[in-house]
Image (cartoon, rainbow, N blue to C red; front, side):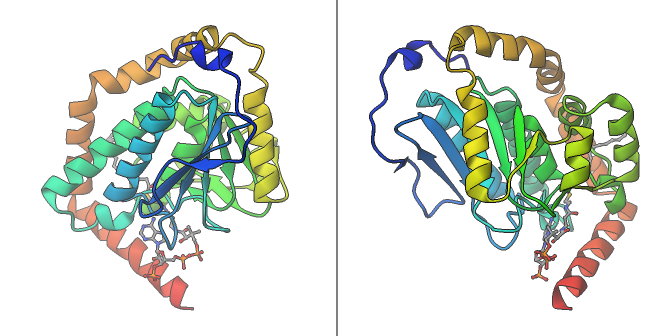
Length: 281
Ligand SMILES: CCCCC/C=C\C/C=C\CC/C=C/CC(=O)SCCNC(=O)CCNC(=O)[C@H](O)C(C)(C)COP(=O)(O)OP(=O)(O)OC[C@H]1O[C@@H](n2cnc3c(N)ncnc32)[C@H](O)[C@@H]1OP(=O)(O)O
């Protein structure tokens, strides 16, 4: 994952952003040729539910951004009111065994790649960001959110348990007692509450402003040696990353066992039904 320092030495062309990824995918990557920052946009209507395909595209896009030696990565959504609705519950409800394995393994890959990314990362949270959406946002180093949305790890409200590595990302941002209470309650924070508690760093009034603030954060490293910066970040995050890397198989087993419990299946079914009822009203 280590990036070389070469990118910092190469002057940037002064042209507009260019697309690297093809629009048929569920993510797009756009590189700003002036700043060298990559914007990674999730685009899976209606709610950016993280299913196997979106996770696969996210993983490939993060890899592409690392490989292209971008100056930084900004994660955002093409949906004007939803950053990501978190994991697509349909992947976990009455699951196909092999697909469920691939789904969770790819989620692990995405977290390892994003939390462990060598480039500076920021999330422009331009909509609601529950559960898996919050996981993605808290895996980044900086968060800018639009007003009147919600963010948090609400797993207990669904009768499921956030795995340890979800908690690691959350704990890297929030004080322990705030994180512990919020996790136990399945609390969703409003934008204002998220700012007050440090779950986000800034509020912006539009997506453009959020992207600009994220770019400003990434730009704050322009005078820092990129290798020194990324090695420092990696050391700070090494313990949580190694914990999952060393326990991937057990984590997968636990997930499969847990999701297949009849009580969990029943809870997910009821939650989905309620979501559908709500969307029809
Ligand atoms: C000690 C042992 C430890 C073991 C631990 C091991 C393993 C742990 C096991 C499991 C952990 C798994 C972790 C899961 C984390 C998750 O991410 S779970 C997902 C949580 N997400 C949510 O709760 C969000 C639910 N959605 C909403 O709140 C709203 O939809 C929204 C995002 C706020 C958007 O609201 P809006 O009004 O705009 O849209 P609608 O609600 O009308 O939705 C439109 C459409 O989309 C469907 N939908 C919404 N969210 C999801 C979703 N997450 N998955 C699937 N489908 C979703 C909704 O049903 C509507 O569908 P339609 O009626 O067919 O149009």
